[in-house]
Length: 326
Image 1 (cartoon, rainbow, N blue to C red):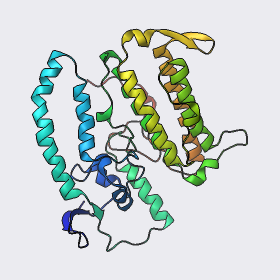
Image 2 (cartoon, rainbow, N blue to C red):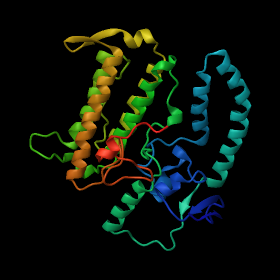
Image 3 (cartoon, rainbow, N blue to C red):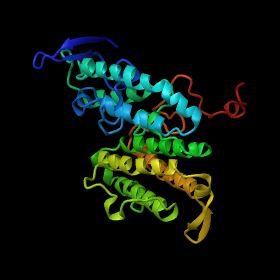
Image 4 (spheres, one colour):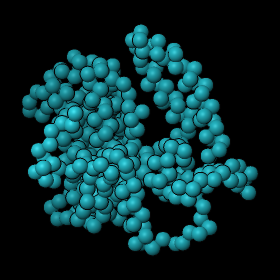
């Protein structure tokens, strides 16, 4: 990708001009600002749907990262934190200011651009997914660095998995347009919109009634706007407080038995049951995508539409018989 620093003649501000957009911008560490891309930049660089919908500055990203450092409690962790404090607040902050000054207005060089046809737009979307070099979800609402640290380290996998599963769900939702919300493959099937609403309401019930997390009133769970991006934003708003709350729970809390419909189960069992429930509804929507002739995203491995170098799907007896690589 060709990159050059230019000056906006209207404002006198410097900006980075790039020859590509979409996933190519995010795969290059020189051009990827994460959620610091403004809505204007996302419009010009075709980044909508490839990152969390929230816009946050470089400083806000730094502050969130530092909160994870502050959560450290052991003497060793505190010692490490004290040694790193200067680096985080001085060196990284300087880089953040430099990046904001130089790359505040990245945009496409559009003098040779032509109007997209429908076929070109489809080809661009396929290229966006096939540019991946590893199984990373480009539409991640919760980056790895923003997952809180569990106070009981043996339960960190719960936070990591919940964030990862939420990213998969968000990735799937963002492939539907507003017009797709009414789609249902059979008169007795739920529609796309109904499944998204159920996901938000059902998760709220699991976490409130069965896991006893503080949750908003059910009447306030659904977004006012009925669009896939609005459902996605609401998903973010509901998931992040849950991660923070669960990060502070100890082993006793996770292993406590609680009522679950007409039986009693440990909280950790109920949590994993919720993960399976969400995966079930996400799978419904990926089937809908295929029936609608749309691209099907990667969730637990490559699909017919999404692959990458080194992908190793288990489609043969030979692949299924492999042992762990040492």
